[in-house]
Length: 289
Figure 1 (cartoon, rainbow, N blue to C red):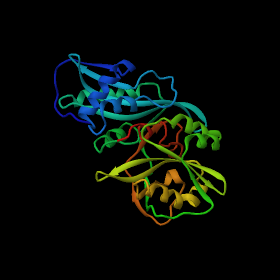
Figure 2 (cartoon, rainbow, N blue to C red):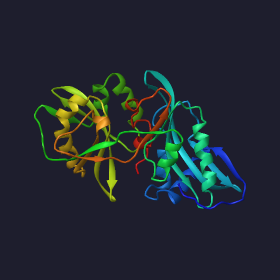
Figure 3 (tube, rainbow, N blue to C red):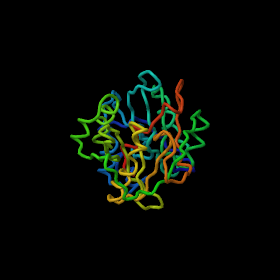
Figure 4 (cartoon, rainbow, N blue to C red):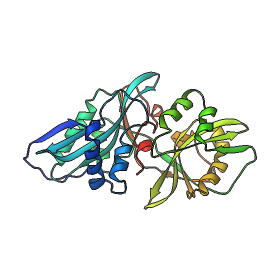
């Protein structure tokens, strides 16, 4: 979040609705991440899943001029055994001079009526703010594995979305339907002895190099460990020679890897444990940073 000095111009807080998305998208393109075009931002901020929430976060205007945005993704999900309204805190950007006002955006989202909040890509300055507000850290221990040209006769990597839809059932089928159109993720099914394991991943940058595939969802952790070699070969030929596998997503350590501490991710919710929280229905799936 930018902003360090204080101004006296009256600043108005308002929700981000569909009509204001083009303006919000231009603001985020110009002030937060110019690597995404304004059109890309506008598409990314519209969730690929259905939600009863009509807004996309909150914004600040001074004399009618946009000076701050906190974009968010809302969803209605079963978490820890019951349906909850979930708010994912996605993109916080405030112009210099309005930093103190910027906290109004966070307070508005925390007062939105959601029962669970996630912050899955906070900047370093945001983490202590979250912690003071009762957020807890997720364990982001990550195995970094080289993707090698390893194929197994009894493992098939399925990429066709029509075929994927026919292979999945239950919760994984619902997750795939909700994220099939999400801009930041890709989908495969690993057929291990003809048994399906749904895998969702995204291409990520480290030191500005887009050479990494980060796992977002694994439907069957036992099958995944049997199929990770062919998945790595699939990713390698697509220009991603390194796999990032958070242990909380894959269920444990991955072979042929080294372990690092991943970037911070946080959550806040009553009667919710860290093991109940995932990266779905969020900016991780929606915004192709």
